[in-house]
Length: 174
Image (cartoon, rainbow, N blue to C red):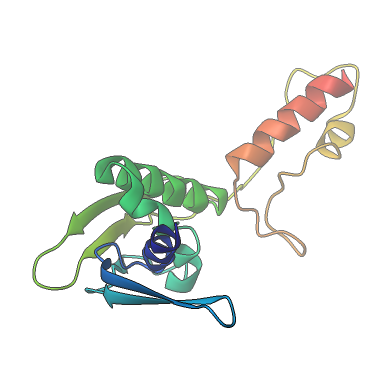
């Protein structure tokens, strides 16, 4: 069990090829203590690269990648899932035309995950028009919405999730 825990700890840090090549246990009969000794071959850690991210910092994107999951399952599934996670993050920041592709290479001594990002333009709300309302004024309905045009307190960035919540709020108001 200790061997598995050590290998898992290395995997969480990106050392997916780390192997315990030898282990030794010595027992001290006088004190009742056990000393465990492991010989570990670390290999090279996994490197994660982002290309094309001009608007969102690399450090922020790194936080979205769960490196500990990489060695556990299908690599293609991991890459697709995390590319999708990055796209969702970009869209939550108003980049609705963002696209992310991912690839894994193990050429040479350093295994590398590369996420290639096409950010696109940030979508901003220029104008909000409410039509077909009779029971309430447009102003009353606009007060229910979190989506806003740019101004003093808002950048006017379009966020689809927030807009859907706005629609639900207006429906509930009726």
